[in-house]
Image (cartoon, rainbow, N blue to C red; front, side):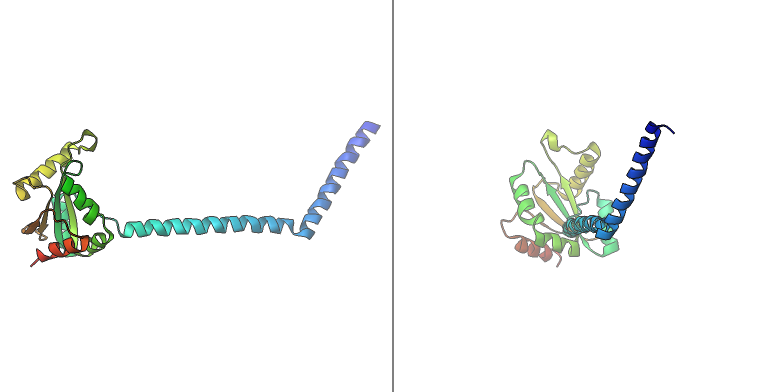
Length: 190
């Protein structure tokens, strides 16, 4: 064995011995345990943040609105849930009172909560701006709804229907609170 081979072998043995001692030192000082605990702590923090985000998302869904755009679907759901149908004719991008009604009533938390209990929501929107135009099928569907329930072309028009599609009453824009507007809709039921 020549000297170069001996030196190479000695280096390899020293590296092995050093690694073995380092592993023992790590085990004695619980460095691996500390690293593991740090990683677990990070995962717990991530999980907590994820849970908060999930809960906020679920709360938002809880008060979200499900506006239908097909009368037959609305009738089916109204029959299944024994609810009335609230049909709204709107010009969402050009009709000032429609925009106010949407902002002050339809988007209010009190209306969202009440609508989940009482009505199946059906919207027939007639936007005019190119960016807001609806698909041809949806436009045709809304025009059929207007022929049947809004022949005079009033905007906004709120029509309360029973589960078969029979008109119970109508309201237009009223400059009142969301709570009062809800009561006005309920007054159409009698």
